[in-house]
Amino acid sequence: MSVNVRYSRGVWVCDISTRIAGKRQRSIKAFGAGSKAKAAAQAYAEEIAPQAKTGKYWERQEATFRDMWAQYEMHVLASPDLRPSTAADYRAIGRLYLLPHLGERLLNDIDKTAILDMKAALQSAPGAKAAGEEGSGKPLSPRSVAKVLILGGSVWRHGRDHYKIATNPFADVKKPRAAKRQPYILDAGEIAKLRAALDVPVERLLIELTLTTGLRSGEVRGLTWDSVDLEGKRLFIERQANRRGEEAATKTETSVRPIPVPAYLIPELKRWKLACPLTARGLVFPGEPNAQGERNPIDADILLRNILRRALRRAGLPPLRFHDLRHMAGTLMHEAGVPLKRAQEILGHASERTTLAIYTHSMRRTHDDSADKIAALAGLSAPPSDLGNNWETIDSIESQEVGVSDCFTGSPGRIRTADQRINSPSLYH
Image (tube, rainbow, N blue to C red; front, side, top):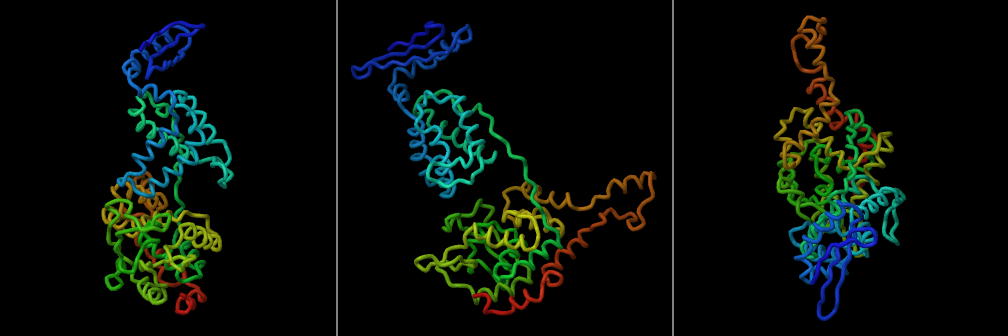
């Protein structure tokens, strides 16, 4: 076995050769001209010499990224420690993006430039889907491109020891950052409009339950009747439904929690329990029956597009994500004076920081007259006559709470036709 650094045809190269099972193996890597290229070639020779003595180095010469992905899939994605939904997401990213761009390339040929080329293609190519799959017609979002690059780096780190690779070409490629999206928070009047537009009682029940409890989409879809305490006016969240409608563990350990239910929804839940189609799991919100006549949890896309966004269009309101209802619940908790720690427990957040980030939505939309009060105390302006020395804001929590509660307890949220539909048990079927 030999590892030599030499100057050949105007560039410095590292020439590695050996014999394995009587067959000569040779690899030549060029580093360019100049003293820096020479130093890089010498450093590479020192690094690679111990590896060149083993078969792993020569195995790498013929290994492709697809081989490395197969190792990752076998050792990581098949592990019981990884959530099934997470493993499914990673497999989809590999199948749709990493393998089409890098799958057949030799590991030795994949460098920072190759990763930059893939990043540029993902950010510009419409759809960016694998052959035979229907794409959106739009390039990937910055957040999705970042997820592809992060997973690629994880795959490479996992395979680095097996293939004796010193560097990770994903490491030096900057991940695109998506602009932080501020959720649109409906006020009490807009909530009343949304409620009036939900003309199917069970759909209105589903949305209002989410808006007043802060349940996640999977928690709503996986909710079962044995987790609903109608007499105690609370829910017990222990499981959720994943995207495929299968029963799954909650997002985190803190997601297992009891949640209070507003009293006005209890009669609605009782009526719906009598009319709700029976399912093997006792689902509160089952979907349509499949070919076998079985009912799984309501589909996530139906929840968003057919129920929420359809009602938003009818009400003349901007489109929202279903998860935005959870942000609204946190905002309403703040405006109702719920302590931060209690809100964290109800929402099932792992830390108060997450809850506080939601609470700031409420803080931004509340009128802040603190500067006027400071100026008045300093004698620079006359204090507003209706404020006195009270440091509560003009739009006090109490006044906002009244407005929010009005849209759930009847007028002005209810309309006559909606009330008639709710009071007609036959319409729940």
